[in-house]
Image (cartoon, rainbow, N blue to C red; front, side, top):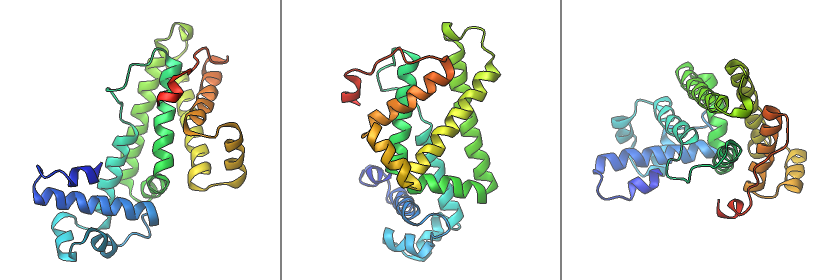
Length: 224
């Protein structure tokens, strides 16, 4: 996304320089993590001087905060351009599918989210607020389901929180830590991203509805 902005000549040179630094920092964070990030390496990758860096950012903490904040927005964004899901089960599938693809494409940045959130209290708070907003949004949507009528909203929120943590932990084992047994098992039952999202969705539906899925992806797996 940042590289696309940099290539747009409609933006000012200063703005494109700022985005170049952010894109370079994002790539270095993906490769080395927050503790391994050095301002000099960001500048070398961006092709700018150290002095120019400090015209835009105070230090590596500030540029990392901006990169991670933008990444959080992407993770929790709702794609209003996509076709509206025809059921809650399909909505859960698409949410899992989008999140899984972001995780698989950016395992280093996902690691940084956890690392940076622990080290910088302000960013940890931002991450928690984003997560809490997502939980509340999903729980409210589930509460409108006729099949779940009468279910307590706090109970649904707790279930969504637990299921979200399950997905985070599982995807971390697969894409960040690359635990051999977990990777091989998942490959055997779900070889691609769509099949993996379907597997996670089945777990969600069984946990929330205490039944198997009614919705079938059909041809939508081919079009995602």
